Image 1: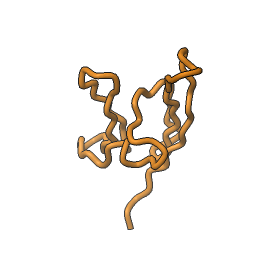
Image 2: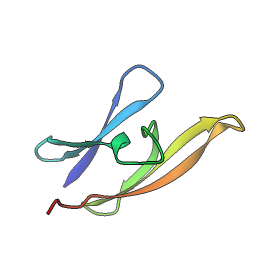
Image 3: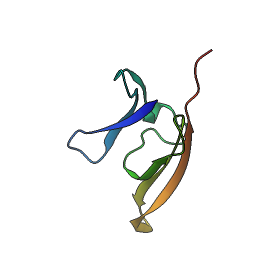
Image 4: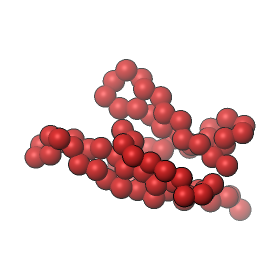
Length: 81
């Protein structure tokens, strides 16, 4: 079983990491997983489908969408072989 932990460093974005829930072992920084973004900045909505599938949205702000728009993701955690 896994968990997502967020750390707010005092700037604009939070940093999220994936950990084993019962051991606290850090597995990955989420920003390193996605090729289309250098960092998942602000998780807006989220839920776990099961122990290995995590859905979430990120609120993104910019010119033309100052109120923000949501980008949606599905994260599947696989065991290493």
